[in-house]
Image (tube, rainbow, N blue to C red; front, side, top):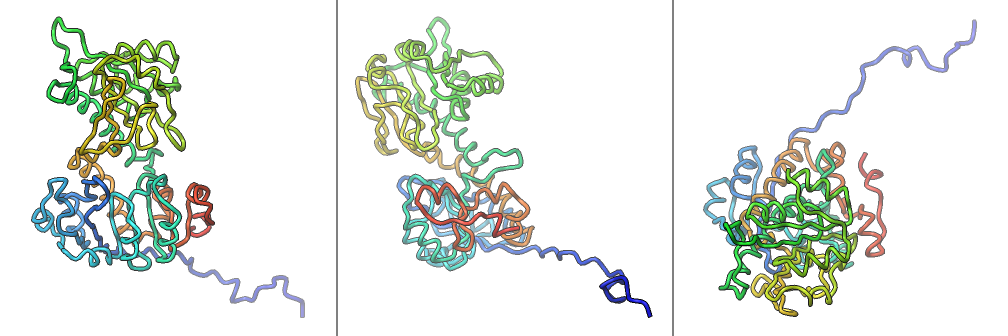
Length: 399
């Protein structure tokens, strides 16, 4: 009797059916939308139309009474769209999925149930260590919408809000320039025989591009400064016409600022916005000129900038009017809410279609990029480095 040449038995060598992973069934979401309590935050995550799209797909939405009031969305509009309205704040925070514009306060985190899915902004520069410790205690899975990327690698939430901030900066400047707002009485608009308003934009990113579009549309003479030639070239291509662009040459910038009626600060930095215009340059600007520092939420790019609020948005320094309100999109709460809602809704429908957040994170790299907490485990390296916390690579937890 000869020895078998295979270490396997006859049964083991017989072909068998291939075993494939069973796809998860579509899940139903139960989403809670609390009223925003952060200072001067007027936006809401979902509009009544978005709620209608979710409820028609079998999902439940519980909204705190008055959550959409500041954005001019009444409770009855949400109710007619299929949402449940509650005056009990704790009941809203008890939902398994929570949607917020601003990150929750420590008091709000204490109301969350363990294992809740939280989708909100993170605003890393405004957080402290306790925020992340509280999330870890509750084993929260948290997504920061300013980190979520789309298929093209863009960050849609940041881009949308930058577009609003860019266009708004010119509209705000136009308001302030009128004589009723103690401006110098100039008007945007290419009036025959009247020299056009001079606008200087520092930074050629999304904010700078949309500020330039709005200013050109109102007939202003626009000059854009940035140290990146690629960004300046891209801005010209997107606008579709040739405008004055320059790198940050001190002489050119000084000349432009001395002649301008409006200066827009839209420069970004890694940890804070770089100070590109010092106090001496601001002193040389025209009396009654206006500075709109859009980058004030990252420190501002004008040395004379100081944070103001929507209630008292301007101050005068060296005879120059400064508007330095962080969170400019909140001034146009309804437009911003529709914009945020358009970003959130497809993601929520996709999470439900995939059978839950775990499956969505496995297949959607852009969504995974927005994850900074997974069942109480910190997964974002930037947060870990900033606060000196331990973190785990998300790819070792989800694969």
